[in-house]
Structures are given as C-alpha cells and as structure tokens.
Image (cartoon, rainbow, N blue to C red; front, top):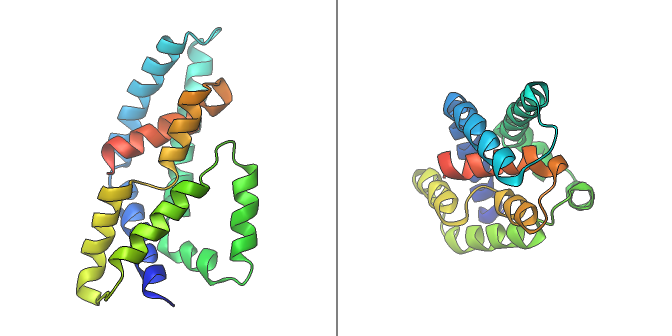
Length: 167
C-alpha cells in the first residue's frame, strides 16, 4: 500500500473518531441549522412532523457518515479490485459532483505522505482534515447553495454541521 493510501486511511480513521466523539454536539447543531435553513428558504408546508422527519434523516446521515469513515470498513473500500468502479458508481448516484474535491484530497495527502512514519501518521491526518476539510462536504455545500432543494437539505445540513464541528 502506498504512503498516500496509508495517510488516507488515517484521515478516515481520525474522522470516524471525531464523529463518534461529537455526536451529541452534532445533533444539537443539526437542530439549529435545520431550523435556520427552513426559515431562510421558506420551504412550504414544513410542519412539526416534517421537521422531525428531516431532523431524524440528518441524524441518520451522521451515523451513515461515521460508518463510511469506519476504519474497519475503509479497508474494503480501498482493498477491493473493483473499488474504482464502485467509487465511480457512487459519484454517478450522488446529486453533487465530488470528483474535484476527492482529487484535491488525494493530492494534499500525496504531498504530505513523503516519508510517513507511525509517529507522524495521526498528526498528518489531522493536518489534512484542517487543510481540506471532510470529504465530500465542500461538494455537498456548493451544490446545495447553487440550487437549494428540499431533497438535498439533510445532506447539506449534515455537511455544514460536520465542517463546523469536526474540522
């Protein structure tokens, strides 16, 4: 495995740890941002039941995101021969385009991964998070802001919350 891949594994592992450790704080901020965004966008017919459903969807997305970064599962993403095909399919299914953001993440990891040692791995992963943020949040935020829509709202709220709290 290349040093870049080792650093990316560490990046996802640190993200997983941070998400798990900050779930309560994330949940509180999700409630605030969701209320703000619904009010700002004037989404119609947003009663208490609909608000609760969207809040629950956001919280489920946080769990999904944490599991995506889980170091136990990440090895399958990077270890399979067909990982590239699976990644391409995911990109096609998403309503946002995260290719440029992923390329920037890999390039930043490559630049930092010159001589990765066990002692430098975690600090380098933390630097990577500080510099590039949490993949794919920037893509989600930009796509939503370019064309806000109710079906994109949970992803957007989660991305904003993670960028505020985790980074």
